[in-house]
Amino acid sequence: MDTSIFMDKAVLPDEEGLKSAIGNTYPLWQALKEYVYTKYPKATEEWFHSGKNYGWGFRIKDKKRAIIYLLPRDGYFKAAFMFGQKATDAIMASDIEEAIKTELMAATVYMEGRGIRIGILEEKQLDDINKLIDIKLTF
Image (cartoon, rainbow, N blue to C red):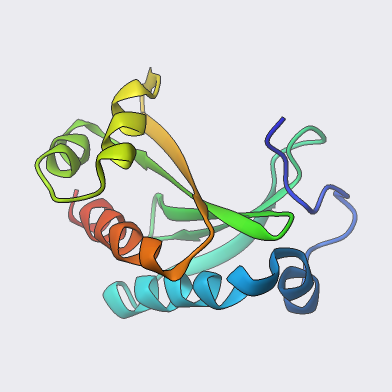
């Protein structure tokens, strides 16, 4: 099961715990947060608990929707998105890595769109994630 490294609903994750949990990927987490705020300075952020089976996650939002979810795991984290059809079309027409496009097209379509989760392990992935953020903010 794909679960957070932070499971206890009674314990809100803090920066020190996050640094320890995601290790060397912590600067990548920070870089993604900074990128969102550069593109959308009015963004807000919050930790949320998804239930006893999934634990804590972190989201950065605009006024009415999540821009990106950052999901802490043991030694890394995942970046997660929900994309509507227009955003999906833009992603498919972009130069984003084919593996991301394949995962997006394989995702179940819900009323709010298609959801994808991408494990973030190295800096070279940030270019594609930043492009996904740009598309999310456009549509």
